[in-house]
Length: 237
Image (cartoon, rainbow, N blue to C red; front, side, top):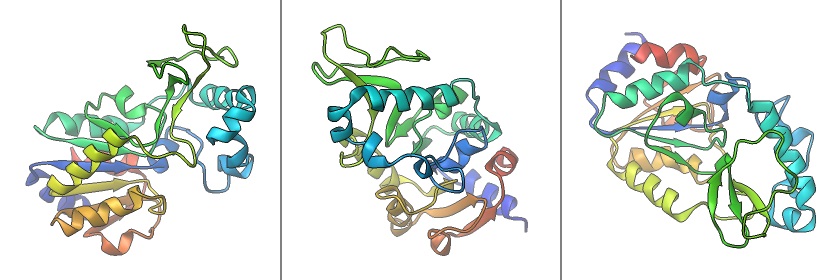
């Protein structure tokens, strides 16, 4: 039986599917990844640009980099994998997408229950009053300021910062309840997301991986489908 048929059979029988996505799904829309031959970290040092200390030392430099990233993705659209996941979400009473991506493409495609582990590049947070708001300006005023006068920072989880408590709690609750997990385009090496599949499997969930190549997570999967998410996921509809 073809892998997609096996996946569909288990998906149809599921009462609460959970999807975990990483950079691979957005790469098919043209979003630069942080790893690989063209990875962003090959051109910039994380400690210079994506830490609280970096922002404290030079907020303008950090914002110049984030403005460049915004410019890179501002014209990009969700791909067939994003849209297929949004459509799948409409077919279940409970359906959660947990993503490591900060590009907002899942929401753009129409997915409703999206847990953004690492924040969203199109949101800003005030370092003074802590207000969070959407901001899609490209280019953005550098460095931007809140109406209260304090600096605004990207609402992104930087290195050395904890994941949002509310988001991570909801993610683990979903993984405790789910009976089907679809892991798409993630390297399987960044914690805590790298442990999510094992957590769900320990609770009896059926695990499926879709990726261009095998990952450290592949050995615990029930089904591994190698290929582009934009080609495989629409077949599940």
